[in-house]
Length: 303
Length: 233
Image 1 (cartoon, one colour):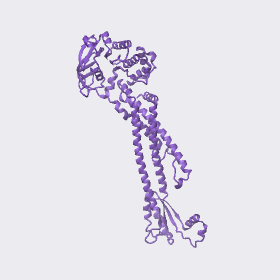
Image 2 (cartoon, each protein chain N blue to C red):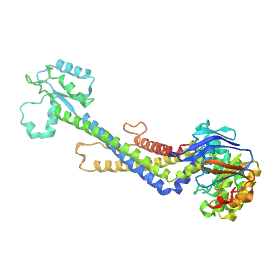
Image 3 (cartoon, rainbow over the protein chains, first blue to last red):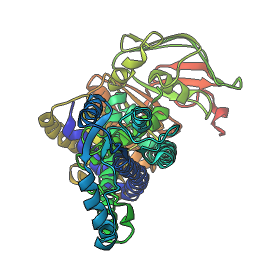
Image 4 (cartoon, chains in turn green, brown):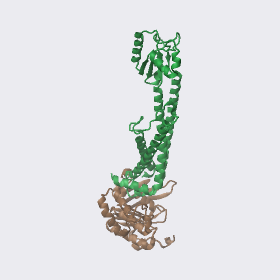
C-alpha cells in the first residue's frame, strides 16, 4: 500500500476543503466532549458514592456486665465475617474521652460513673452488606440489646437504603444519557462525512473511470475521517481534562464540599478505563471518523 | 479488440439504448461512431467500460468477456482503456501533472517511472510548460489535451473518446484529432463518438452509424452522412 500517497491525498483534500474539515472536526469535538462529559460525571459520581458508602459504620454496643472472654468471643466473630473491612474496639474509657471532646469537660465532670458502653465500630467492605452484618448481632447475648429489640446495634439503616437507591438511579440515568449522546455522535459524524463526500462525488467518479480500485479510492477518505475524528476527539479530551480539573479545584476550595466529596482530577489512568478514559475517547473518535467515511462512501462505489 | 454480439440494453421505462447490436472492431483500428443524440453512442461506450451491463448479448473487450467479468476485475479492465470525455473529467484540485500522474498511481507505478513518464507524455501533447497549472487556469483545448495525456500515459490497447471535440473550437479540435491519430499509429485501437461532421468527412476513417440503438451503417473510409438529406440537423 502506498501509505505516503494516501496520506498526502488525505491532507491535501483537507487543506482544500478546510471549511468542511473544520465543520467535521467541530462536530466530532462537540459530540465527543458531551459524551466524555457524561462519562466523567458518571465516574466522578460513582467514585464519590463509593467513598460515601465506605463511611457507613455499624456500632455494636457491649453490655457493661459482659465478661472479657465474651468480648473476645465477639471480636473473633467479627473477625470471621468476610464482609467486614475493618473494625475498632472502643473501650468505655475511650468512649468517655470522645464524649468529653465533643461535649466538654463540664458535663463529664458531673457524671457519677461512666455511663458509656464499650463498643465495636465496624466498617463493611460493601455498603450493600451492612444490613446482613448488623443482623448477626441482634441476638448476641454480649450485645447490649434491650429485651425484644436490637437497639444495641446502631447503623444508618434508612440512610444506607436511600443512598444506595439514589446512586443506582443516577448511574442508570447516566448510562441512558451516555447511550443517547453516543448515538447522536455517530449520526452527526456520518452526516458530516456524507456531506463532504457528496461534494466530491465527481472526483470519485473520475477515480473509478481511471481504473482505481475501490480501496484505492477509499483509503484517502478513510484516513481523512480518521484524522478528523482524532483531532476532534483529542481537542474534546483536552477540554474535558481542563474542565474536570477546574471544577475539581473549585469544589475543594469552596463550601460545597460539605460531605467531604472526593474529587478525581486526573483521568489519564484512572477509573474503569483500561488505558485511561481520555485516550479511549480519542481512539473512539478516530475510529468513528474512519467508519463514517466508509459508510458514506458506499453509495458512490457501486460499479 | 471489441466484439459486440447481439447486444441489447434497455433503460428502465422501456427506453432503448442499444438494440441487437453486432459489430467487430479490430486491433489498431480508428473508428468513428456517429448518430444523433440518444442514438446509443454513449450507451455503447459505457458498455465497453462496464459502467452498464447489457440485458442480452455478449461483449468482448481485449479478450475479456464482460458479461462474465467479476466486479472486482472491473478496475483492471478500465486500466486497459483510456478515456476522453466531452467535459474532460479532470480532477479540479490537482495540477495538470498530478492529474496525469493519478492514472499511474492507480496502477501502482513506481514513483521514479511516474517522474519520468508524466513530463514525457505532457511534452508529447505540447503542455510541458503548463505542468504545474490547475485545470481552471488553462483553456478548454488544453484541458482536453491533458485528458488525452492521462488516457494514454499507460499506453492502453484501447482508447475511447466520447465527443472529445464537443466543447472545443474547430481549430483546436483538429489538434486533438491529430493527437488521437498519432496514438492510433502506435497500435492503439481508437473509438471516437462524435457529432463533428467536418472532422469525420475530412478524415475518411471507418464509420459506424447508430440510429435509435441500431447499427444502420458500417462503412470503411466513410463520411458523416450517407445521404445528403440527412444533413439537416
